[in-house]
Picture 1 (cartoon, one colour):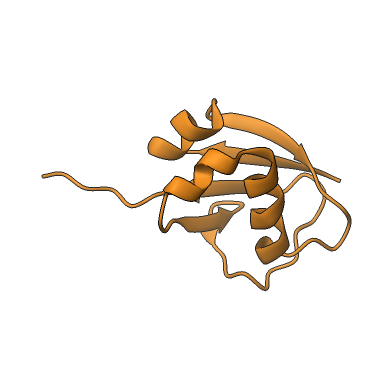
Picture 2 (picture 1 turned 135 degrees about the horizontal axis):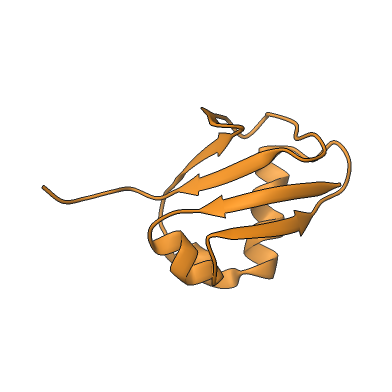
Length: 80
């Protein structure tokens, strides 16, 4: 199934774009989707922690993705 991956901040630099389509098996959880992303883009492991949102709502690792979901990687933001 096709999943749209949106990347913000440093994540877009590490992955090489702000929007990428990723192919994932049916019934893929967020936990497994993260593993797919790391396998395709190993540089993402340099971000120690990040939030995941699915269709503009924060999601936990157990959420199962559906065809055409939009997953966002949101790294920590600092500044003033």
